[in-house]
Length: 176
Image 1 (tube, helix red, strand yellow):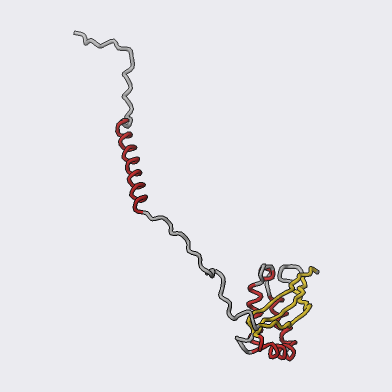
Image 2 (cartoon, helix red, strand yellow; image 1 turned 135 degrees about the horizontal axis):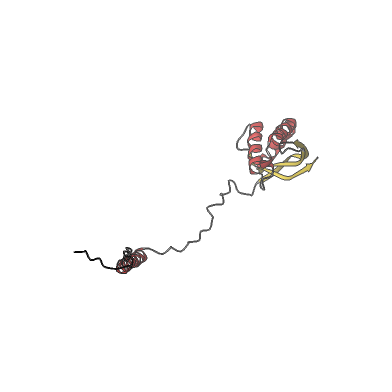
């Protein structure tokens, strides 16, 4: 007996590729949406709204004045003082006016010190400006330079309370 073979010339049907069932994808998406909605409502109901700002007469960023403006005096220490500086890579001469603010009753004392120690003050200021970097000399408010000058002048006058502020009314760079 001869075996009978089916004469099926067709290729066997390819196996169906495994796909996620649409139901499972739908269930996962539904759970994610439901979970998001629950979180939204829980946080919305539990959260608080920002409190309105309360205005205050003084700002936290502004420092309180150390001493009242009444009873202060300015004493000019240097006028049209020229100092060279080449820290930026090119020579530049800075034309400087320098004044200090002192208490009104200390004005005469500061004038006497300024006259008696004019050379020392000029040398100290010149040394600080010559050593200053280009970044320090290009600041809008010259804060670092003012702080350095305040410290140096306090050492010269030998008092931390005499000089209230250092003023630089003119600071002109002259390229050379």
